[in-house]
Structure formats: structure tokens, C-alpha cells
Amino acid sequence: MSNGIIITPGLADGALRRPERSPDVLQQARAFQAERRAARVRSLVAITVMGLAFLTIAGQLVRLAMQGQTEQRISVSAPLATAFARPDIIDRQGRLMASDIVMHSLVADPHVVLDQKEIADKLAMVLPDLNKKSVLNAIADKTKRFAWIRRRLSDAEAQRVHDLGLPGLDFRPELRRSYPLGRSAGHILGSVNIDNKGLQGIERYLDERQRVEPVHGPSLSAQPPLRLSLDVAVQHAVEEELAKAMQRYSAAAAVGLIMDVNTGEIIAAASLPGLDPIITDEHFDKDRIDRLAGGTYELGSVFKTITAALAFEGGIAPATTLDVRQPLEVEGYLIRDLHPAGRPLTVSEIFLKSSNVGAAMLALHDGRQRQQAFLEKLGLTTPLATEAGTVAPASLPESWGDIETVTISYGHGLAVAPLQFAAASAALINGGYRVKPTFLRKSSRTEKRTQRVIAPETSQFIRRLLRENVASKTGTGWRADVTGLEVGGKTGTAEIPGIGGYKAKSVIASFLGAFPMDKPRYLTLVSLFEPTGTKKTDGRITASRNAAPTTGRIISRVSPLLGFLPD
Image (cartoon, rainbow, N blue to C red; front, side):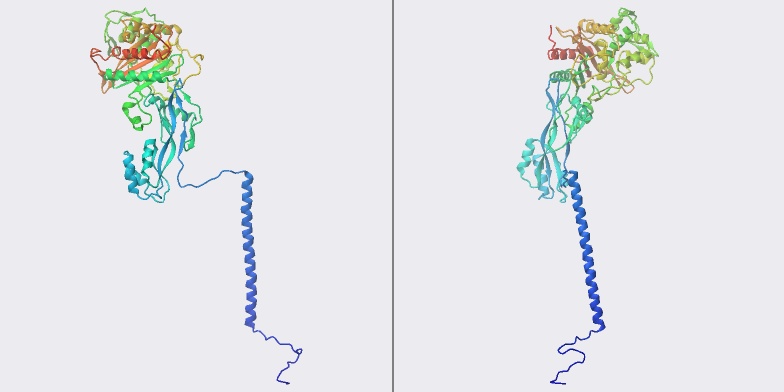
């Protein structure tokens, strides 16, 4: 011991000795080191996983870029309304009959609407037919960002709504089908739904032929117009004359048709009361059904034209005489003439005087099988369709015996659509060729016809009978004559079936016509449903007193439009 300093043996001079650690302290140190190593491992694993994830995403982006994908998809809060852009419909002269126009639809953002009741009340003031309850229901859910209020407003309606300045309302342009002629040819043109998709008539035909395009927004169609066989001027004349006839004879309905007998093109086709394509309710009105193609009817003595043709085809000469002085009994039924001739009649006279007894005798001579085959050959008992839709199928008798053969010979017991009867009759007038009715304009009138159904001599015989029936005062159709123009035709008055039998004073009065008879070009058919007798008709309701003069007025009016001036 020197100067108070203790020197520990075994240590160099000036060296200090580290204090010895306890076992607990050493254990804690080793645990700390192990934890640090574990943390470093976890970090490396996390970094590796994240790196791999980023590499995967990068690789996916590179792959998509190399595939050249350019489509972008976005999520919107308001649905996009899918509509259909439709081509124009024009008549044979190029005049517009149907077209798409752009209109404004009223929409709402319920999330932005401040006062729901205010919007419903004020909209009802400028749009009186708007249902306030429907408006309130549409904008009630604040979580929604879109609601339809009214589709396709007129410009005036849209302006009135705009002037209200209500927050939460907006407009969207949409396509709407427009028919500038109103109800004219409404049954033929058909209709579309709220999305501009064709439902009926020519409009449906466009959809079936894939002439329409789905669009978002007001994109007009780039398709060429569809040209119809109809002539707007002729169509208007037919509809106006039929409307006058309904008023003149207090008829419940009327149909009229003009057809090119050589091509089957329908120049005019009307069923009154008509319908407006854009008024939905009218399509469900039973009084506005398309009686020309959508219903079947017994048409009466116009069928004697077919009976006469069948007799001539069977070898019966026009001068053959039949004794029609007494009623004919068939299967317990008596067949009578409305105005008995009181003497035997030739085949030609049977047609001109419209003898039921004579027609029945001719039919019995031909027989049931030949009658059935002839009707089928003309296309009267087989399905028929046009571009405007399927024609109502003929209503055939359940059993076809002698009495059915007889009644069919003068237009009872077999119900057909007037359009189908007109198409069948064309072959009797055009030289014997069957034609298919069409509402599309044909590019050429010189197309070759190959389906001959009767001999040309038979057609010539029928044309002579039709002309004589109008030109002679002894015929039933003389009131259809037009000065300076050779018109031919046949009358038909059919009692309408009712419960327990036919209604005696409820008839369909029809007239089958054609002109000019020296070289027939056009066939006409006019039918008046349930006409009443007037002073001018001497109280009679027969076709000679109403349908025949109506046909004369129509032909007189449309013949110059079709290129035939009275000579």
C-alpha cells in the first residue's frame, strides 16, 4: 500500500478492471440480440413480398399494354338509355311517312333535389297530365343519382319546365319516332315502343330485317330510307272517300284497297276508324282493329267471281243455260235469290244478276274437291303474310259437304281477310298469274311471272263479265261506272253472323273493282261494315247502293293520280 492506491496483482500498471456481470444480465443481452436478428428477417421478408407484388402488377400492366387494349370502362351513377335509330320510311314518290326526331327527356338527381313536394307541384302545373305521385316516388330515394320523370317532351313543354328553375332537374336528348301524316296508313306503318323498337307493321319489319341500330343518345340512323309501294296522295283520297261513305251510309267501319294486279304492289290500303301510331291506347281499341288484314269476314257475292272462273275452267260455256226459277234444296236448306229472274239464266247472266241459285248449281257441278283445290290454288285457304305482318288466316268450315260447297259459291261459310281475297282476285284479272301482295315498291314492273293459276282465256272471260256488270244497267255494279274510264266490278252483300244465325239487317257491303278493263292495271276493293239505309238508297243496304258508288268516287278521284285521264 503506497499513497492510498491498491495495486491488483496480475494487471499491468494503470489498467482498470471491468466489473463482472451477473448471469441475468447476460441472458437479457443475448435475447435482445436475437430479437434484433428476427426483426431484420421479418423486414426482409416484407420487402421481398412487396417487391414481388409490385413486379406482378408491373408485369400485368406491360401485358395489357402489349395487347393494345384501348377500351375504357367507367362507372356512372345514371343509367344510359338504349334506344334504336331507325331509317326514314317514304312512299313510292319519296314523300316522308315516318322519321326519327330528337326530343328532350326530363330527368332528376334525387340527391340534389331540395324540396320534393315543390318539384311535384310545379311540374304538375306545366305538365297537367303528369302523375304527381309517380314524381314523388321517383325522387324519394336520396341515395339515387338518377330518375326518369318524363320521356320525350315537346320543345314547348321542355321550355316551360326549364323556366321553373328547379334544382335537381335536367334534360337528356333522345330519339322519338314521328309520323307527319298522323293516322294516314297508321295500320300499315305500325308502331314503336318507348325505346324506338318496332312493335307492329312496317316498323317491326325494319327490326326483323336488321335495319335499325342500337344507340346511346340522339344519334340518327345512317341507313337509307325504306321506300314503300304506297302513294301518299292516293292513300289520302281513299281514306277521305271511305270516311265520307261511313258518314253518308252511317257505317260502323270501312276498308279500301288499291293494288297493282301485275306486281302485287299495294298503292293504298285503309281501315277506318284508323289509328295514330304514337297513341298507344288506340292500338288496344277494338273499334280500330285492322279489318283489312287483321280480321276475317264472309264477303258475299264478290265470291261469285271465283265461282264463275272455276265453272269456265271446268268447261262450262258462258252461254250455258241453267234453270234458276225455283229455290234449290240442298241438305234440307233452301237456296233462294233475293230478286228472282223468273226465267232460266246463262252463266254470264247468273253473274250479272248475282243469282245465288245459279252460283249454287255451278258449284255443285264442279264439286267440293275441285272447289277446294281452286281456292287453294288462288291462295285463299293458305297462310299469307306481308311486310306489315301476318294476315289473319281464313276461317274454313269444320265439315265441307254439299251445303258448304253451295254457300261458299256465293260468299258465305268461308271467312277471309279482305286483303287475301283481293290478292286472290288479282289472278282472275291479270291474265291468270298469282301475285303476292307487297307494301314495298318493286324496282321493276317487268319481272317475269311464272305461277299461272288459270288459263288466259278464263281471265279474259272474267274481265268481260266485270266490265259488263258495270257498263250495263242490267248489272248490279253500274253505280261504280266512271265516265271516260272503263271500270269493271262485282257487288257482294253478306249478312253478318250472330248468335243463333245471321243478322238480317246487319251486313258487310263490298265491291270488287278493276280499271281500266281494256288492259287492267289496278284492282280495288271497298267494304262497308253495317251500313244503314238512307233516302238516297231507298232504305236499302245492299252493295249496289253504297259500296259500288263509293268505288266509283274513289276511282274517279285517284285515276288521274295514277296516270289515267278520262277519255
